[in-house]
Image (cartoon, rainbow, N blue to C red; front, side, top):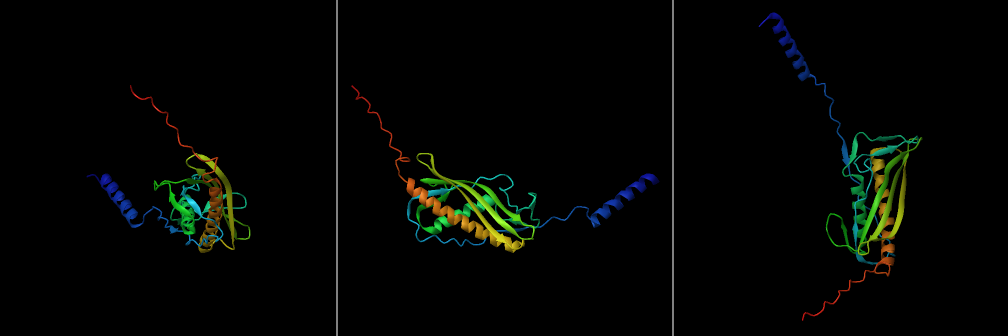
Length: 226
C-alpha cells in the first residue's frame, strides 16, 4: 500500500471514530402523552328517558385537528404547537369517548354504541370537530375553545331530524400544561352535557313520528298457480 493511500485510510478511520464518539444526529424529542381528566358530567335529573338506541360516530375533522397535537392560536391568527406534550389519542376520538361516557352514565337510552361496534341503532349522532385548541391572549393567559357541529340522523328514514352547533370556552390564567389539560376536561364535560340534553330532546320529538316512521313494504300477492 502506498504512503498516500495509507494516509487516506487512516484519515477516514479517524473521521469514523470521531463520529462514533460524538454523534451529529439530534437527540430525539420526548413528548409526554396526556389523556383528558376523568369525566365529571352529571346528567340533569329532569332529562326524560329515551327508549331508543343511539350510535355515536367519531367526529370528522381536518388533518390538523385529527391529530394528537396541542394547538395554540395567537392573537394574530398564527398557529403553533406545544413541543413537549401530545394527546394520547387524536382529538376526535377523545371527543367521541367523552360523549359516549356521558350518554352511558345518563342511563336514559336503551343502548349506546359507536360505529366500530356494529350494534343496531335507531339514531346516529354524526358531527364535525371544528375547533379543539387554545386561543392565546396577549396577557399570557388563554382560552380553551371547542366547537362541534352535530347532526342527529334517524337511521330507518335516513333523515337528519336535528342539527346544532355547540361551542365551549374555558379561560385559563396561564398556558401551563396542567392548567390547560384541566381546562380541556371542563370544556369537554360541558360540551358532552349540552349534546346529551339536545340529543334526548330531539330524538324523543322525532322517535316514531309521522315524518320518520317507515311503513312496511306491502308485498304483492302472487297469483295462485294453476
